[in-house]
Image (cartoon, rainbow, N blue to C red; front, top):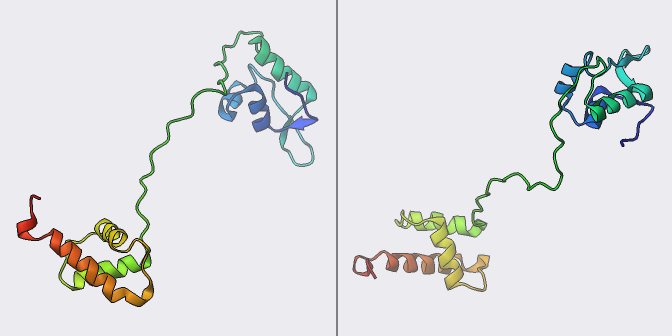
Length: 156
């Protein structure tokens, strides 16, 4: 059984009986008792007596008006998690690779894509590239991609 506090809000009382706040508000007055109101700030609250009464209504499935009430079963916590959407992971683009792609386009190789550039850079420079040899990297990538696109190389 749930432990009671000195006073709880409507939302917390709804959580204690396993209902949404909207459904709890719908049942207030007929199934559950009305809350008390604080004189100082006019906020509704449930004291210990009303909390016990609400918990008893939930346990017995019988409202304060004497009518039977059917509640949905509480959700089982070990149910499978909700299906999550798959995240599409894009390859990380290094700042230098964007420069290489721009350089290829300025050299007239407009069909080159970023995944192609990344693959060629990894193949040609497995140790990585540094800022000192950008011209050599651009040349190597350009020649590799140009060789792949030759007319006599199609279909191999």
